[in-house]
Image (cartoon, rainbow, N blue to C red; front, side):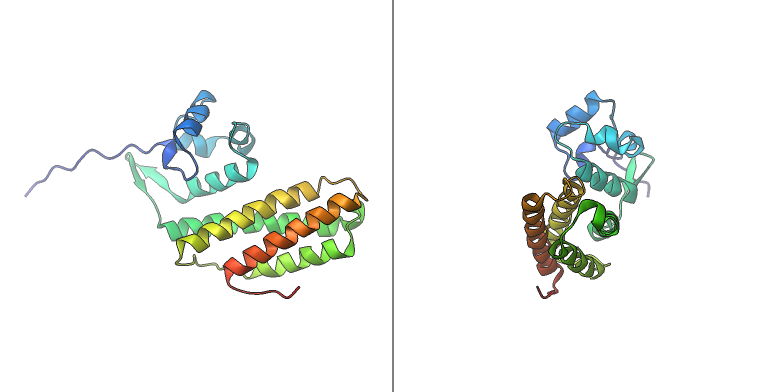
Length: 191
């Protein structure tokens, strides 16, 4: 018995989570026409497109690295595998930012309480599950708070040394996001 198989589906930029029709059109304007183009494009080039931050571009590229195209068909891992990869990439970036801030705490004139928040964040990141949680909402919330923390820590490195008011605000925001991340991971770290 010979059967005819339907033509393989052509995968589009909109198959990447976070890219809708409008964003796909803006990507096409900068010569990113396919998933392969997206994978090959430098992170800064993708982040230069209106509507995509550097953190989002990095997360989208991490997603693209998880799957491969063969003969026009997408061989994709499960959503859990993709989540694990994206979460580990985000964790790696966050750990790098935390290390950089702690290493240069004197240069940034970080207060003791801010450094303590960074240490607590490290402990939370150490408990990030290596296996994706079964609950999709939990996976989404973990990534949401990790992205927010990444933005906060990137901005913290840009603070003027000795800017106490902004440092206090930044510390409180890091504390808030750390607690939310910790809640969604399922563990508690004492204040």
